Image (spheres, rainbow, N blue to C red):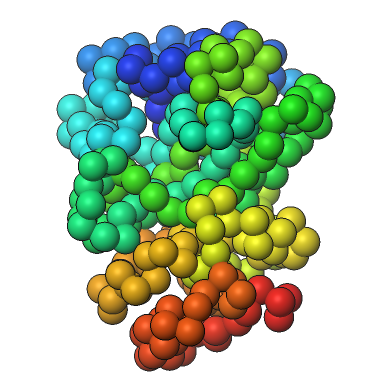
Length: 301
């Protein structure tokens, strides 16, 4: 039975907002569970609280927990599962997002550091485990809920792989941004809370259908618009994305982590060709050509 753990932090205003909306969600009922986690209450999604019969079938095969930590999410390298009765297979972080523009937004991304810089959590030159199907499920679930609640003033973005934590369990950050007015926004909290629950069902759907090709991305900018279009328009799911400004930090070890830390087998290395300069290409292509994995440009799809 697959276990999912949704994590909220008391140190994150948006995360607290999303957690409160999950606990009062109209699409699922979280009941107080007996085991504790990180010295806080743990909640479990009740099968009987979900009305959709297809989703109830999925819930017969999975367990969904909601946990609260007093630590900052990006520094949560230790889930302390040795002190808990739960053993999650997949983790979703309900998080805030900050940006200089302050643009209202919903975002998804995987985590890891392409360099030795660990100011924002994780470990130097280490990628967390990830799932391309989970990222696509999260992205499409946000789109669905934004449309349902008419939240057209919010952008929907896929970010490149960045910051911590680095876990050996596949994880996804689902974020509400980008300034305090959004972090406390009642309706935005509902949207992301509902989207997180929907992500779990959508992930299981993708897993069952087995119709998505799996890729990892290289090149482009932080908000990865070309990869967003790729995922929108094709049966392609992408997990790790290394932006253009870290391409020359890549080495064989990081490529091995990309391959070994992704839950699904990688079908393609996918390049945002116009988002790479000649020096980037000269560094990247010899690294990728060592593997028997097709190298494709986004425009090839």
